[in-house]
Figure 1: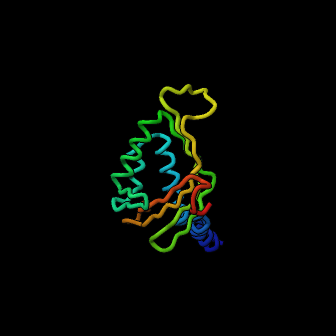
Figure 2: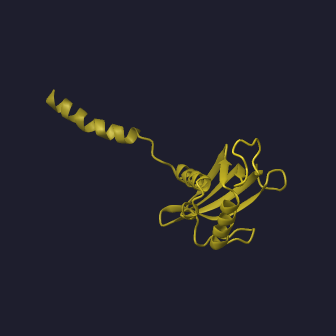
Figure 3: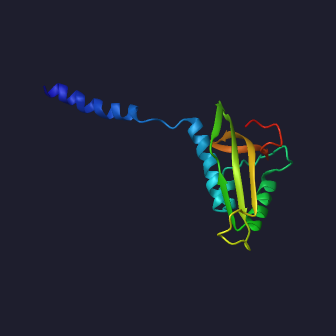
Length: 155
């Protein structure tokens, strides 16, 4: 009886460890995208840039410093920034990943009353974000975006 109890006591931790769901690479990529979303809403440029590769280049002509300037401009222009992303499609292939999603971006200027019905800036954008694993961490290497309904990015 003692042998069975000992074996059971050894088996329980092993079973518990195997029962815990392991975070997938897709989960890690989604966490990067949602961390960028949260940092954007908090207007924390440094927190956004933590997830951007120093080798960043996009079709719009931006590099790492260009994205930094774009964020600074947008955050300076809008006292309040909101980002709503209802769904994120993620595909991971080895050390690269692609996240495709639509985001509703709003910005409220400093002079706008917080009780106003519509924000100063409002737009729905389709995003295609490319990431690469750098030293074990997912980083954004490029992004394409366009107003929803105006281009060819997948929706």
